[in-house]
Length: 251
Image 1 (cartoon, helix red, strand yellow):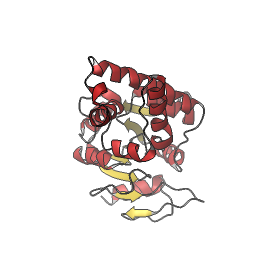
Image 2 (cartoon, one colour):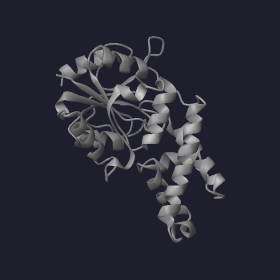
Image 3 (cartoon, helix red, strand yellow):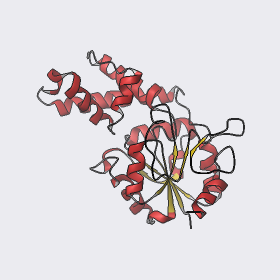
Image 4 (cartoon, helix red, strand yellow):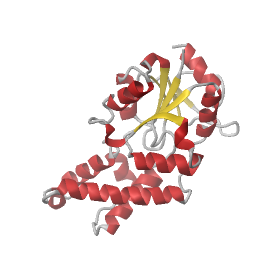
């Protein structure tokens, strides 16, 4: 029996990367007096690594050896990441990053069907809280029985650790849950945790390899905004809880 839906956040619940996290990183760099600037294309390349601190380390090692070689560089990276998180939370508070089409409908449908909601993400707990509260309301975090986020596990996606952590907190087996992802690293993570996975792509992930996913869509869709099925089958032009339960029943 399907008992829980486990959601990634960035790119899955909201299209946060290009006009959210990327912008916040650049604001943090500017504030710190760095001449770093991550344009849309470069940020797409950096997304091959999960985790904001990890992306900054990758960039510094490739493009700014003087920064990478300075004493206490890890501490400087943490300070930059904290600044970036502050800017990102402000952008969310200004309502500039809405949920993706169909997300709120699916969440409500799952709750009405008695399913448990959970989150498994590499982004920080602060980012999760800011997104959920700004889009679903100040008490909306209580709708999620488990929120696995940030550095709560040592190995980030594509390792399965964050999903295994959430499954343990929920007290459920993988075959009682479905995961929702948007990227190749995310799908590698969920599949490694033995979770069937539904994918919604975005501009950065549309060309990723989603082999093994149960269903791949360009979006969840709405009545007036149909989703395109890229892999798998779906009866309607949008994904709803009935469609999710049908997919689960066919596994």
